[in-house]
View 1 (tube, helix red, strand yellow):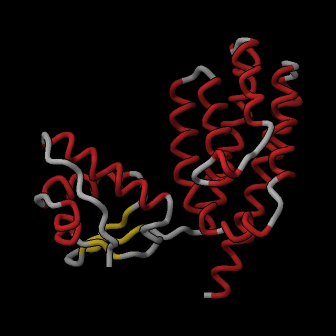
View 2 (spheres, rainbow, N blue to C red):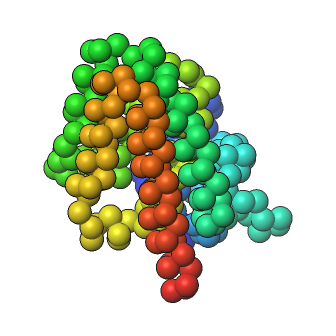
Length: 226
């Protein structure tokens, strides 16, 4: 059963559709709607106190993004997180972040690079979403500094979609010490501020590859346990 949230305020049709889409997308990415959860238009319409039309539009958008699977004559299901898909996304993200490093070195101002210092320390009290929120914010900022709208958008989508996989491996993050990962961020920041493009690319790729191994191993253990 889908846990109800406070319905969005009544407004124009387009705003309603956007609100439903954004809420469902956030719930799926955060795994509040876990992979495999069955979804029915009627339940969502009741949850949001609206007709089925904006709900159907939102689900179709989410299906195009790969977050939802349509089940003929049954409704929808939150897409599972497959190990092969996670590995593919990490592989693509590593390539994009390498390219992003070069553009940051070329185009980011000294002031913009100095602002990355805010990510040199992780304070749990400062981040409502904990380390995952801090980590996503850091990589989103790098994507923005790359000054390439298409690459930025691709990276942001990947960061969002991959958050589901990270959420599923969250126990490892909670049990472990996040400081080594923060230190990896610091090394990337050092390389960018020194405008050492090759070093920044190497560190960024190593950072993503290591994350891929951690998340893939955690998901593999979940699949075995299931």
